Length: 80
Figure 1 (cartoon, rainbow, N blue to C red):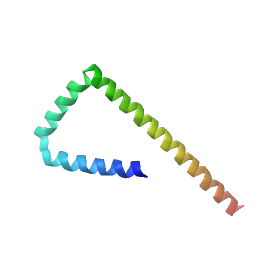
Figure 2: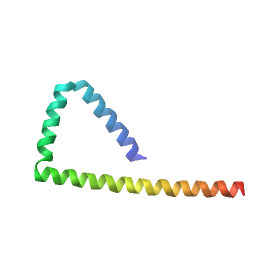
Figure 3: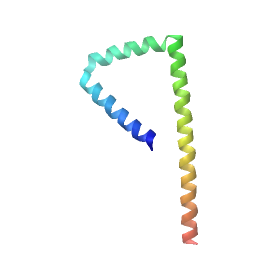
Figure 4: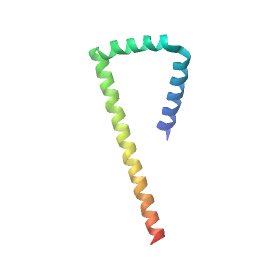
């Protein structure tokens, strides 16, 4: 639950700041990110971040699956 709240808050703040900054600032940030992505240490950081995100979504998927199985078992018990 904490991750989802943090993600929503992060998205909202990013959206607000992005809208406030305008197109010129967006282009400036895009250029910086391009330089970082083409730099080996920056590329490594991006790859590690992706791996961390993949692990987080995998854990969330497993937790959701467990919850759904529990709910379906409860429904079967009540229906049967």
